[in-house]
Length: 314
Image (cartoon, rainbow, N blue to C red; front, side):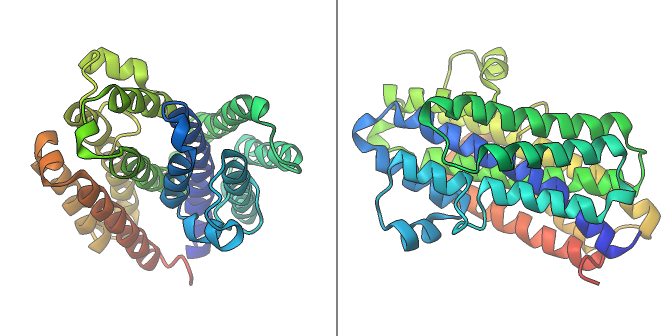
C-alpha cells in the first residue's frame, strides 16, 4: 500500500472520530453549563481550550464565551480550522482520495455525512435544535464505523482505518476528562460536592456510558472510580486502556505485513505499560491533569512516528 493511501485512510477515520468528539464536547459544555448557570463562560472557555480552539476563539471573539458563540465556533466557523464541519469535510476529502481502498457502502456513508451536515450547518444551529443535531452526528459516525466493520476486507486498509479511529478517540477522551477535572471544578473544596457529582454524571452522559458506569460502580461518582472507568477499564470502548489496546492490535496486524516491530510498537507498548502500572487512586494522587496532559503528548508523538514509519507524506 502506498504511504499516501495509508495516510488518507488513517486521517479519514481520525476526522470522523474527531467530528463526533467535537459533538460530544459541545454536549458536555451544554450539560455542564446547566449545573452552574451563573458561570456559563467558564464552561465554554474550558470546552474551547480542550478542543484546541481557545486561542482562535479569543482572536476573533475576545473573551465573550457565550453558548451561542462557542457552539457556532466549534461547529461551523471558518475561522476555526478544527471545527466540526471542517473535520467532516476533511474526512470526505481523504475518503475521496482513497475511494479504491474503500467499499462503496463506506464511501457513501462518509459522503452522506458531509452532504447532510454541510446543508444543515449552512447557518447557525438554533439552540432548540442542538440536541437533535448532535445526536445526528453521532448516528452518522456510528453508521460509517458499522459499514467499515460489516463490508471491509480485513486487510491493511481496515487496520489503518481502525488505528486512526482508536488513536483519535484516546486523544479526545483524555481531553474531555481534563475539561471536567482540571478546568470545570472550581476548587478542591468542591470535590465530592453535589456540583462534582452532577458534573461527573453529565460527563458520563456525554460519553454515552452512564448506564455502563452504573453497572460497574453503582452511584459512587468519585474521581477514583471515574479514572478507573474512563482511563483503565478495558471493557469500556472509550477508555484510554481500551483504545490503546485496540490500536496495538491493529498496529500488530500491520507489522506482520511490513516487517515486524518498530519504534511505533515500542512507544505504544510504553504508553500501555504506563496505564497498567498505576491504579486509579495513584493517578488521582499524583495529578490527573498532569497524567492526561502527558498522555495527549505521547499519543501525538506516537502518531508522528507511525506517519514516519509508513511514509504518510512520501
